[in-house]
Length: 580
Image (cartoon, rainbow, N blue to C red; front, side, top):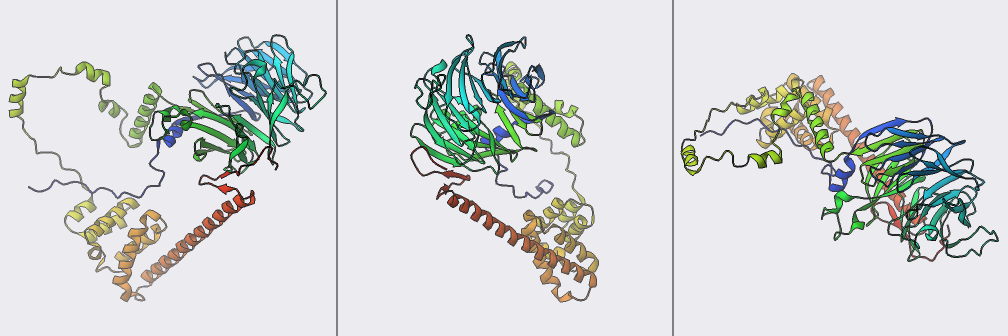
């Protein structure tokens, strides 16, 4: 019995090494449907409410906008500021919001009525940081350009602590997780433009100043060579990340030494955030012994327009996203549904990760779009739709006929061999009739996709019929072959086949060089194209070598620091403070 007629499978081109996405890449690529919103001023701060459904506050110009996490639309706008607003921060119960402004004023708002509940004006310079304590609903942290960091009590309106020690603007501050109890006893970490990160303990009396309000002292000082533009204490309470210039410094405050230096950005790092990648926590291939810290990721944003994602185990970059403008702020929702990035030009990007019913709906829409692009009606999707798992369970066993009926039915099964023969392309019919030259001419003369021509050449090569297909050609039939080879020789995935065919053409028709001006001109073009590709390859090798030297030289210039595979740098152990 003859073998059934089947169409020739198209050639499979080599794929990029990253084409097979791993769970990490699939997770970050699932943040789709980007929504871009143009504001009239820079987006200086983004904060997600700790309370579900995790609406987020966007601080820009003289207002704070509250976006719904369900609709991604503005639900409230707070604009009762006399100057530029900074650091809109929602309390953990989702009822109050605190924000500072360029006049040094701190205001507490009721999110329902948008009424001002409390106003503090003790700072003499702009207040760039305002945050609620994660353990006390009545304690507020502020940091100002007057180089002070303060704790406030909401019910009484009094200053609980004033931390004095920075010598320049303080643009970053946060409560240290698990640091010394709640309320005014929680430890505070701050970063200033004097290049220092200071750890403050409100329980330790101050001895560095005679100011009666200074009721806290810096228990640790970490020195950096650049101003601190971003600061992130990790949830463990033992690790602090500080963005100084284009480098993120990772510190272990228990061992009192730096851990690693992340030098993956080209400009100042302006925003840091962390997330617990829950979708990877259950994947044994990506979690180390089931530890929750092995799936935690740190996200950094920079003025170079890049967002980098780091694995906190190896501190290597596992993903990156490019944005069209310098990044000033970023945030990711606690349930990891929204990734929001604010830019210097007022552009706000909201990427949403679909899951559950939303994921099924988005996949259905993608399939319908692919059918429409293929020229098929969208109704074809419903005809091939599989039954749901619930429907299959409900109908299970209803078509059972019994052993007797099943046996009799099996005895009367008829196999229909009259299956419709597949439609073959003209060049496929020529190949079946062993008309190799005609098949090659069809894909060279007609407007055939390059992949189809490559498929024919590979088929001829596998059948050892290339010489037969290329023999006995004149000027008119040889010219299309040389033209196609010259046109596609720049494609790396075609090079192997093109070189084999070109060498065979040269071997078979070398004796005819000089007899046809058209063929001679085509051969000269091919030679020039090959020379150009070789030159570009050599230039790429040189650039790769120079980049390698720059990366290696940058690590040596940093004081003999070792650069790891992800571009990060490991510090040698040294006592604190570490001078620039």
